[in-house]
Image 1 (spheres, helix red, strand yellow):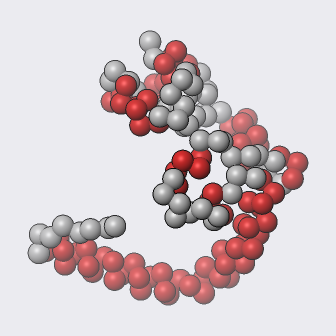
Image 2: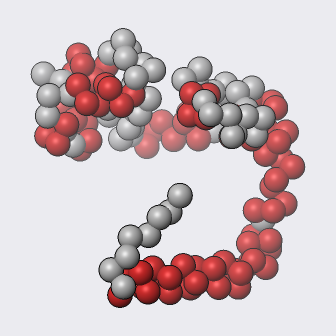
Amino acid sequence: MYQALLRTHVLRTLDSLFTILLPHPEELTIKSLHEECGPIVRINPIHIPINDPTYMDDIYASGNKHKRERDPWFPHASENGFLNGSLLQTMDHDTHRMRRGALNPFFSKRAIQDLESVLVDKTNMLVRRLSQAHREVRVVNFT
C-alpha cells in the first residue's frame, strides 16, 4: 500500500509535510518495509535506508574516483544563513574535500586524546546542571 507513496518525489522539498501526509506513520517500521519492498526503501523524500552490505562500497566509497555532489535539497537546511560559506554548506565535492582536509588534524586520534580531559570535564558539568535542574523540577532550555 505504501510502496507508491514511499517512492514518490513529488514532495521532495517538503520533507515534514510528506511525513505528516502518511496515513499511519507509526505503522511503518523500516524493518517491515524492507521485508515488503526489498533492500532499498525510500521512507521519505531524503532518507533511503539500505539493508544490503553489498552497497557499502558504493555508499561510503571515498576519494576522487567517487565524487559526489550534494543533493540540491541540502542548502535549505540553513536558509537563515548561519552556516553559509561553511564546510557543512559546501555543495561541490572538491571544495568540500579541501575544506575538510584543513580540519582533519583537529580530528586525529592524537588531537581527540589530547582533548579528552576537556570533554570529560564539560560532560560532567552538563550532567551536574541537568541533575540540579531535575532536583529543582526546572525546565532546561537547550537553545
